[in-house]
Image 1: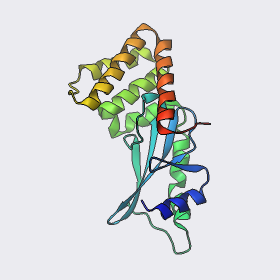
Image 2: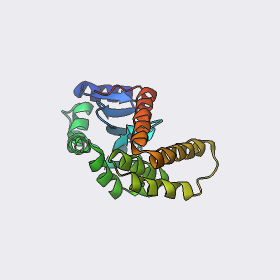
Image 3: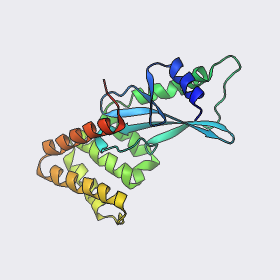
Image 4: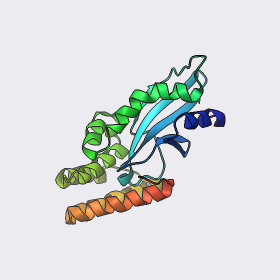
Length: 195
């Protein structure tokens, strides 16, 4: 995305910040929320996303997101930043309402992403955060029973699931502590500083 365009957005909304080419809300609580702006041949599209930081996030992605618009336009008197803020304003409010794990579960359950392994893992970790370890164990068992392949990236995924499964089976407090540790690692890895 054009650097001047991004700077116009950040100038119009000082509470937003740029992290890994994503325009993010000031991190708070357990979630990182924001927007992805993509330039396309037909114009600009905007996606919103939310990521549970306790889910061992290694990079920002749109798996738990939705398209805001594929038809981003601005009138002649708006700066790009003002047009962006006008477009995303209702979505910022929606994302701010997803500040607790229980609301994220409802949102995640309705997404197509819930049907893939990353969505299932996020669902399981969120169940643990909600003190629902038996449901989480069922989700984790289902994940462990799937053929996840042997690619290097999947080895870490499988290791995380096995570790979380063991901790949850032994003690739900230990599982929550593991997720708190993962959250700290995610924050450090992404270079963000929650309030």
